[in-house]
Length: 88
Image (cartoon, rainbow, N blue to C red):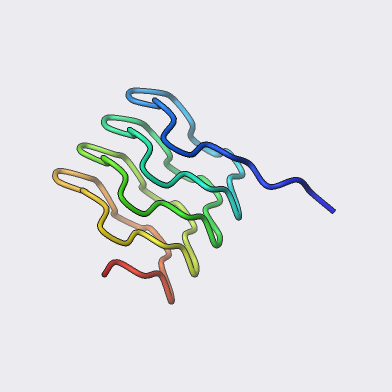
């Protein structure tokens, strides 16, 4: 079984993470401002409370992902698959 990626409260601001597999990862409360996650696998990722200002998620797969209380001002979500994702 694959280990769960732990990035809780990580500083990922401005990082190039396109195409990465972060499925099931705990990214809660991380700083993802201006980061690029385009084309990333975000299946069941936990991104609650993130700073996603200017975050690029184009073409990402975020099925059943949790974005509760995420700050997504100026984020690019074009082409993102987000069926059953939680943006509450």
